[in-house]
Image (cartoon, rainbow, N blue to C red; front, side):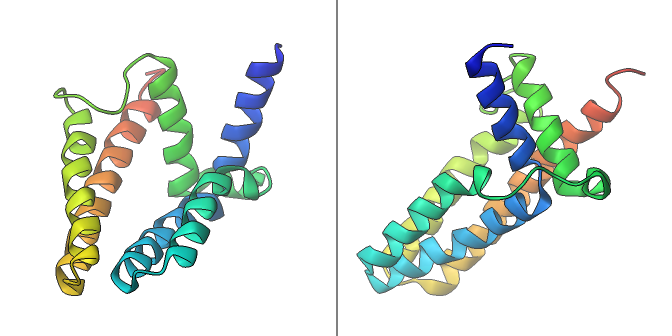
Length: 145
């Protein structure tokens, strides 16, 4: 095993901890709030949290392996290792493609102080992301069938 594959394994094993995935979901509203309030320091903290989050938590416990988020992270890794990518016009990647402008609008709405629109766009963005995760996870579950 090379150092880079060992590093990648460590990244994915720690990111598979459900606390990693769910806390990343919670960082999104913090980014929106920081933009809404024009708080550069809070935006910096949120950005650092997003970057370090995937390795902040310990490796997923055996009990966590049944978690929806853990299953989703394993599926995402499998999907990427197959060379599928996450953005594109094919199904289900189109969901992530739609997620990009939806999340961008959430950021814009927060910056222009349209809080309700920002939260609604963020909710739509998460719905698209969760749908993508679920569809990839279903394919992951069927991979050996």
